[in-house]
Image 1 (cartoon, rainbow, N blue to C red):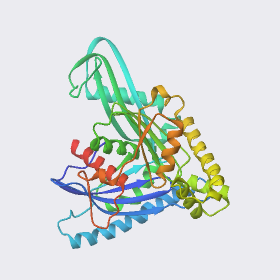
Image 2 (image 1 turned 90 degrees about the horizontal axis):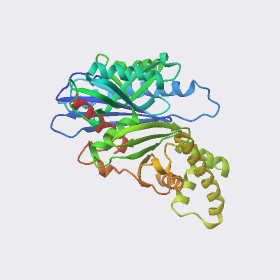
Image 3 (image 1 turned 90 degrees about the vertical axis):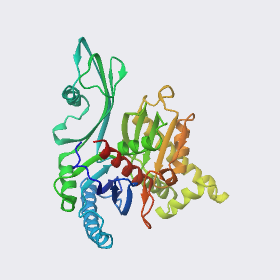
Image 4 (image 1 turned 45 degrees about the horizontal axis):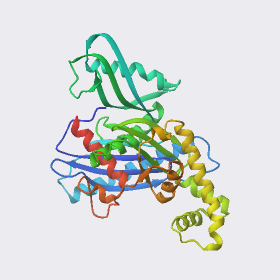
Amino acid sequence: MFFSEKKEDRVILLISVQSSMVRGTLVRDRAGELPLVMWSSSKAIRHREDADASYLPKATFTHVRNLSEEIARDYEAYRHSDPSLPAYIEEVHYALASPWILSHALTLSKKYDNAVPVSEKMILTIISDARSKFLPKDAKELAIVEEKIFDIRLNGYSISSWQGKTAHSLEISFATSAIEIKTEEKFREACGHIVRGNNIFFHSSLLLHHIGLQHIFPEKVSYVLVHVHGELTDVVVVENRMCTFFGSFPMGINTAIRQIALSANVTEQVADSMLTMYIGGRMDTAEKEKTRVIIETISAEWNAQFANLTGGYLSDEHLPETAILTSRSHEAFFVESYKKHFEKSKVELISTEMLSGFISFAPKVEKLRLTGLYSIALTILHKRL
């Protein structure tokens, strides 16, 4: 992954794209200061039962274009009120959730009869050769947009300065992210007018989530990261600070609300309230039992899809003790659902207070946890280059 030249003061645009929402965020990364979230705006993607496969991409690209135009106008206004701001937005970073990105984690092992010198070219060649084993058959239509090496072990030992050393055995743990080439082109077109050059980069939202968490909580070694968004749930398993599994399944917050509405024959707004009241123990006794059956049925379906996604990978013998769960709303419902499937697990939530000391928010800007974690991760990646 290549960024533009390092600068002491830069402004980047972070565009988070999920299954039912697009959010644009301006972040100022200034030497000697915490990253500052200056501006944020969201566009919801309305669910349509009668929509064909082209609806979601069209609606998403339209929202990205509209956000980009809105940001371009607002940034000029910011510069008038604060002349110290950089003259332009330097980079655009997309944080893509499912279904927009395909991520895969892998550990490769090589053994040699004689000790061989290890070089960057050698490592990248091994990774490139391995891609054909996990990318789909239509891989020619995909662009590799992100690759992160978590660990390199020579002769069984993790080595940070491995270039030029020799080894009889080599292990590489890494994650690769790819998106459809046509999708990449559309995303670039949608925001290309607000940055100079071609400084547009793509990331797995889960990978950024993990990098941000590792910076804030370096003591967390192994965990399951669960992000529930509108129409899908994304999952990554982290072991010894390395992502070892990525996946998603088609059931999210909005999906659950629609199912409650359909089962109870109520509007989605009422269904949303029903879930809040039931989980909070504030439901009238006369309605509680009927609602319990509906909600537990939906919870069981979410668990079944989770189990189907992970298969035997997250068995009791192969389960990190901690799960870290994020959801725009109804986190308590998904926490309870997860605990029903993995009874021995400890589920943790992230609060905005946990981000203090690592990132700051301008007055009147909504303090969103994922926005903060993504911004922290991008700052870290920039400074490491």
